[in-house]
Length: 193
Ligand code: MN
Image (cartoon, rainbow, N blue to C red; front, side, top):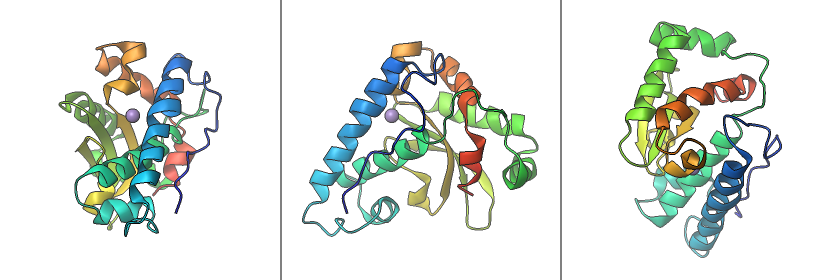
């Protein structure tokens, strides 16, 4: 299976000022492209060649194939969860019901995901994830890991590798994490449940 770049449903400058055109050009155009190229080269002739990203993450040991597959899945979910000027800034329907049940309120979930993302030491990701019973949780995943490694469904993510925000926010990771909520495409996120 040849893994491909996700097609962005917005222009490179459409998420400004939250994410600049320059960051999209490097983060999507260079970093993600490199993960896709690396993964396609690494899996050639291996048992992972016919597997999809989740299957690779579930079965590959820690190492280059796992890391690159994780980053391709993580960034595909990341870049496809954004939209310029979304009509609504909050989830609705079943996702909102689950958030209220498991966190008390949307604001509390946001607070916990922000804290997990800001507090992650080094490179990695903050996640909202769902278990097989439908229960939501906040997770910190280091490096290229994804909640799928733990049998959980990835719902929403915040990339806190420095390449995600350094051009726009330098060391101000909390400002980047707070700003991300203005461009979430809740229709896309709710479909992941
Ligand atoms: Mn990234």
